[in-house]
Amino acid sequence: MSSDPTDAALRRLAEALGQAALSHHHTLVTAESCTGGWIAKTLTDIAGSSAWFECGLVAYSYEAKQALLGVRPETLEHHGAVSRDAVLEMVSGALVHSGASLAVAVTGIAGPGGGTADKPVGTVWVAWKRRGGYPAAEVFHFEGDRDAVRRQTVAAALRGLGALIA
Image (cartoon, rainbow, N blue to C red; front, side, top):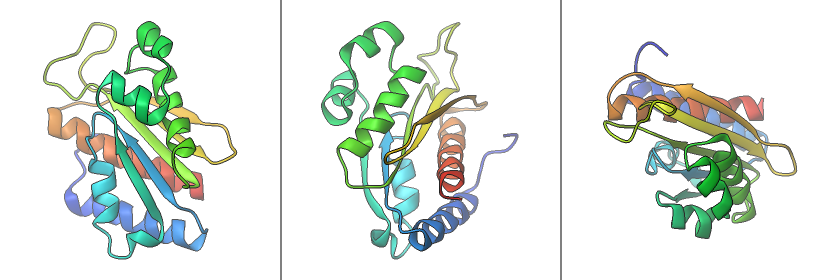
């Protein structure tokens, strides 16, 4: 994505997602690390979101990922928190620990520090899952500062949820 989504653009994505969730009788759960609850905030900024938004889980530490989302210690030890394996366990855990029908999970390196040669700043994994279905995960390599990486992550998460409903 070449430009960072504005607050207005994120709001439009959230409104469209809310309408789609409501019309298809879905409820949503978020499992967030690098976005720190920004996806849940964007969704709950929409009046009436209680009809389709169930809960948001912010799990930043390894311990929280394990306790709140059921991420296995072996996954974190062998692959790290910013990995396909971790985000798939996060998205599945979000559904297990909620009554929602659709989930999104995000984990990444927003910066400015924390990046490595293998996982540079801007590396973000996003996963989506429908209850009873198989999860899908995608890695993104976003550009920009911490705010830009997080904004782009929120937009990607919302777009993916919308595609899951469609």
